[in-house]
Image (cartoon, rainbow, N blue to C red; front, top):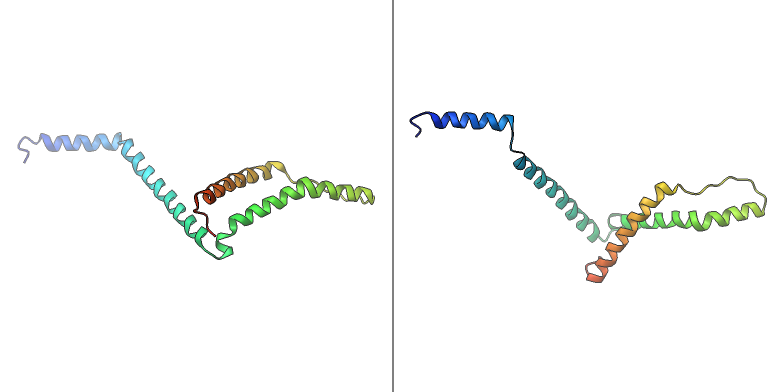
Length: 128
């Protein structure tokens, strides 16, 4: 029990100081904890999706890989052959290549995921 009343005044001053200058380290800790929970939730969701035998659930990553591979094949193999064929038959249809500024980030991301998939296979944790 505080006989002098200084304890309650001290508490009042501390409350005022914390409202004016809040402890940022505690707020940052809470934000970090919330962010970690979100990331962990996404990791858990990814594990469940990858373990699913249904191709429509677990196959979206390979699908994106095949789409990116098809786009690269068209851009660097199919398009030059088609342009040569059109020119040979004197058909004037303008065809253009895919925009690499849009395609290369997808390709680089997929190559990174492919490397992770290889690591999973080497470690024996890849889904069948």
